[in-house]
Structure formats: structure tokens, C-alpha cells
Length: 363
Ligand SMILES: *Cc1c(COP(=O)(O)O)cnc(C)c1O
Image (tube, rainbow, N blue to C red; front, side, top):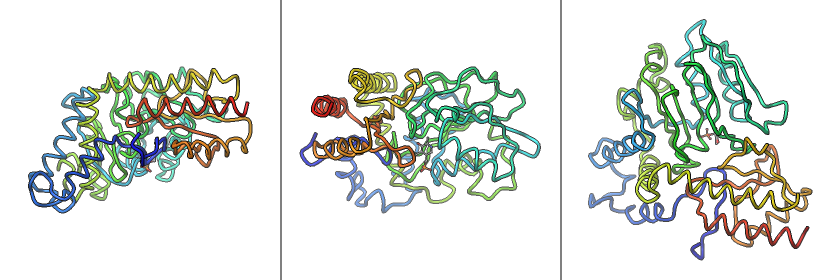
């Protein structure tokens, strides 16, 4: 840790790798000899076109996407995708399946219902406070798509394997685990992720969409609410969030070249999560994980202490020891350590050491 920077376990916006922040700083006043900052130049300049092109190409390469997939850079966060997906893909009389695994899935379902789309919730873990990922789901064969949330940021659960939908295109909100591990993208019709957890700052949403879903997009939608507007113009129909896209491009380059790709990224992420869950499980009940072990997230580790007073003291003392962002989401309380891509092994080791000492002193 650099003396003036804390170990940052924020849930989003979240930590970015120091080398990426330094590169942004160093290039900020004069981007590649242009005499301008990246935030001062045209989105149609050759410099910016190469930035956005590289971000799209690296996404395709890191995830092994074939030519049917398009990489789009959009605004409105993951939250706008909740509405755009049913607007773009559900023509009159067509339905889609949703799996409800927590707050963000619930919000996606709500938005589809606001639009009066006849969607069906085919599985839910609400019966046990969203502490697990449902198994053995029967999807409807005539559904246009099946929507899941791959990682539940608030409840600390994650799909370790994606469900078999028998050919129905999967759509996933991957906001909080995108680019944290490799996966087979072929069953997916669309993937979306707000950048501010695993791949950069807030302000841009990465969307990956497959040709066959693009064919469903109707003409009679406002231009900025149609996926085809973005796919036809390389996400440059209007002015995109240039700075956020630039930072995402550097973050993807870091995953690709410094970390060495998604297999390596996943191995680091697995080790980080194993160390922290190991500490929780070895604490003799001092720390209690809130998710069922088989559904535990490698990105957001949620846990409780004996009571709220002790949790408050834990958070205060952690911050004094240079460990920040450990408060659970306001809707559920408790503690949460977000271990996104940019959170180092060193940060996790410092947290585990602090937790062991805190448990010994207060147990
Ligand atoms: C943070 C988060 C969201 C909300 O994203 P916005 O970009 O703020 O709209 C949606 N889904 C998941 C899984 C998240 O973690």
C-alpha cells in the first residue's frame, strides 16, 4: 500500500489498479503528444477512435467472442438496461423468463413490468432472504430470453455455473463480476455491466449483444433506446462518455497484459476469496458468512458479527488500520468486502490479518 492510499473494498464505484490511475494521471494533460487531454478532444478524432476500438477488440479477445457478438458502450448504467432489454426484445405477445436472486434482479423485473411486458419469474431465492442461487430451473421454451444476475452484489451470492436454458438466449447482468473470470459466452444473447465495479470508473455500461437479438429490435423506439443505434455506429452515434471509455480501455489492457488474461485474473480472484472465506470459517462463529457456502460470491464477501455494536466497532477500527469500504449495503446491514479485480492479494492479506486480531481481542 502506498502511504496515502487505503486498502479499498468499496462495492462500487470501487478500487482501480494503481498503475492504471498513474497512467491516467501521467497522460492527462497531453495525450500521446496531441497537446490535448483525452477529455478535450473530439470523439471522432483518430486518437479516440483507437481507444474505443481497442476497448471493443480486447473485450472480444478476452472473452473469446465470435463475430456474432457486438461490443457497445452505453450510458444510463445497468439500471437503464433493465428497461431497454424488454423494450428492444419483447414484441407484443412475447414473453421472457427472469430469475430473482436479489435487489438487482428485482429491479430488472420491476422495469419489465412497468412496460407491461408479460414476463415470468421462473425461480427465486426470496424465500431465504436471497442467500442462495436456485438450481434445477424449468425455463419456458418459447421465452425470448432468460434473464439472470450473475453476481448479487448486495447478498454476496454468485452463479458458479450458468443455468441450462435449452437454447433460450441467456441475458445476464454481470455488473459486479464482469471480466473477473472466463466463461463460455455462446449461450448468451446479451451481457451488460456498469463499469464501476470491475472494469473502471462510473459513466459507461458495457453491453455485448448477439446478432440474432439485434434482429428483434423494433424501428419505433427513440434512437438512444435502441441497441441497433449503437451497433450500427460503433457506439459513436452521439458523444459517448469519452473519459470513462478511455479508463475502461486501460483497465482491459491491464487485465490482458499485466495480469495475463482472464484465466489468471480468475485464479487471483479465487485465491483472494478463499483466503477471506477461510478466515471467516475458521473464526469459530465470530464472523458468520451470510450466503450459503455453495452460492458464495468471489466478488462480494458478506458477513455478520455478533451484534450491530460490534460491527460498528469493526468498521471503525478497520478504517483506522487503512481498510475501507467494508460496510454492508444499507438494505441488509452487516459487513461486506468487495474483492473486485483491482483489489490486490496484499489488501486481502491485510484484511485477514486485521480480522484475526480483532476476533482475538473481542471474542
Ligand atoms: C451496481 C449494480 C447495478 C446498478 O448499476 P448502475 O450502473 O448504478 O445502474 C445493477 N446490477 C448489479 C448486479 C450491480 O452490482
